[in-house]
Image (cartoon, rainbow, N blue to C red; front, side, top):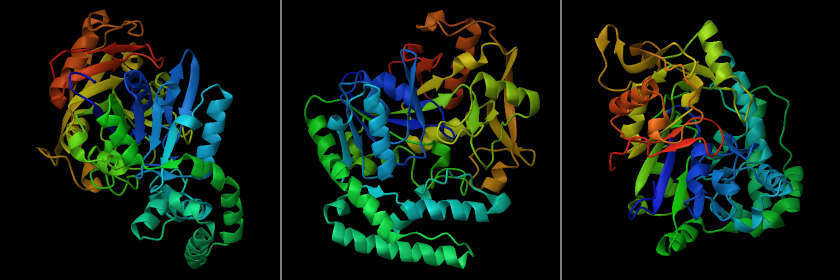
Length: 435
């Protein structure tokens, strides 16, 4: 993606998350000097496999495994400070020195214990109408941010003022818990004691994410902006209300790290060769029974953060076209092509009908998306191992045809194809188009 004068690329999931953003970010980080997360929190689970060793990153950018890359958590990320420090300690125990090359935005908001209490309680009270949150406090932290009652990283520089903010937030949270008839309560003194013990380590990481990126881009740097979750979980453009609590799409990238949008040169959309979703909400191409079990097993489709089984389905072209539009995708990376190697027949969703009529636009209401009927193209499988392919010509003819149909349906050129979980299992510039 870093071609000619390209200096700043956004990497975004173009489905419902779990597309393989971590693997692609890790691959491209070898060409980058800095990787920054721009939204989400520890509800992300980006998996990177290097030399047979698996790393699951929840907050730290996926470029961290490349030792020369600087890492930034932007102001758009909500940060559980205990999870962050645990992740740093785990990486450094495994030989990945990260603390000296990690900057955390002073403007980023903290996820605190009362956020987790509220998240878990609200989700439980929904009963059968659950959204499917990870219960990690992400939604309540973003709610406090928008309502101007949040606690930011910079507040750890003045712990007496921070204590006042925490007491007020705990009082509000405890009032809600009481109104819901629950006995759990947040203890502000305990929270402050725990914050005071870790504040020096967090303060040592704190900085200005925007200034850091500008310095990199005004020099010889090459920057990747990494999103969490997927475009269909965007709070505005996703399948509301079955969405996350932030803007996951590329338009949020500049705001989420503190730079202007004119500095972004391209947007790489990551898509699986099929579709998955975790939790509740519509999934038009969803498979059931034996086919679903087979795809889930072959793709190891279990959440990296929650361990929950993902709901699998065939590739959904309507979803990817919607993502292409709202993100301004300039290229695609297709992941997990190898998972389909043994299928005799593969179906590719190319559109929807609703009440018997073709749909031109992606449905806005989740209730409409629940009712659509996918329109499929069907082709025979390729019946060959793609895991050793490293060039477009190495792929079986049937696999190349399938990818070309994905590209044509999306209207976006494919630049990378992942054929396994290892870093080197990648086909670069798969379908050169000069884009």
